[in-house]
Figure (cartoon, rainbow, N blue to C red):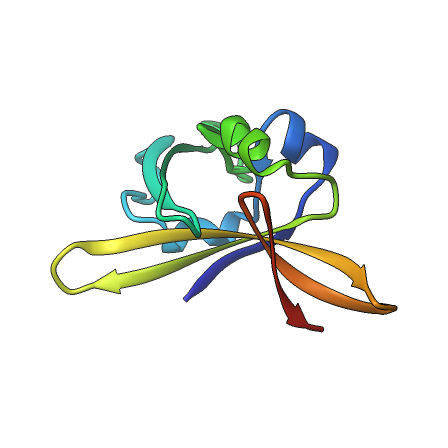
Length: 129
């Protein structure tokens, strides 16, 4: 199930990845009004595991969640830029529980056509757009 699909902003690539509050309902470990930080192990397209800290504000009615931890290392590793898309999906495993997978997508022009490409280390895997 897709839980996050976001085009990156300058803040996302330089400081932390913010995301919609309604995404919290899909992240294991959140309990209404209890936790303000949950650690997530997230796999990328190369099966590398990243340790993200998902945090939210303690006060106010709008928790405004964000990812930190390995997030900036992930940005650097993939050479992310403003406008790239990050997609996070949750897969439920009967034995292991919830598993999170993160993908990076970039719109590029190839032979005069705009295509959506999955960003992988040292290249792209393209998909017709």
